[in-house]
Image (cartoon, rainbow, N blue to C red; front, side, top):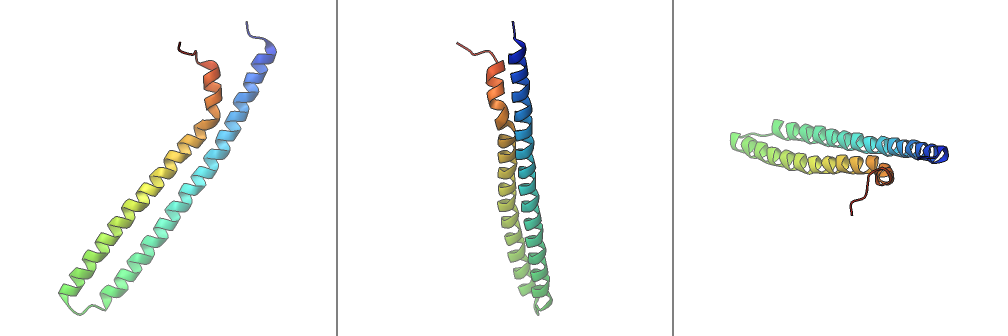
Length: 112
């Protein structure tokens, strides 16, 4: 039979875990938003630079070369930033659920 004190302590632990999880979640979301903002800013600056270079091109061959370089660079940046943001989401999930690990071990039966 569960004592009232044990039940209250378990409730307090759940509340503390929820608060810790919310704090982790908040900082994780902020990191992700910052990463998206930095990527958007870099993409805009790269596109602006590309258009400026393209407007000064005199030959079709140079324009195609410039377009190819820009496409390759944009793709590489996209892949790198996607991986970085994906890792931030993974870290967010890990940190958000970390406070609950102790509670889960208390509730779940141990396998022997």
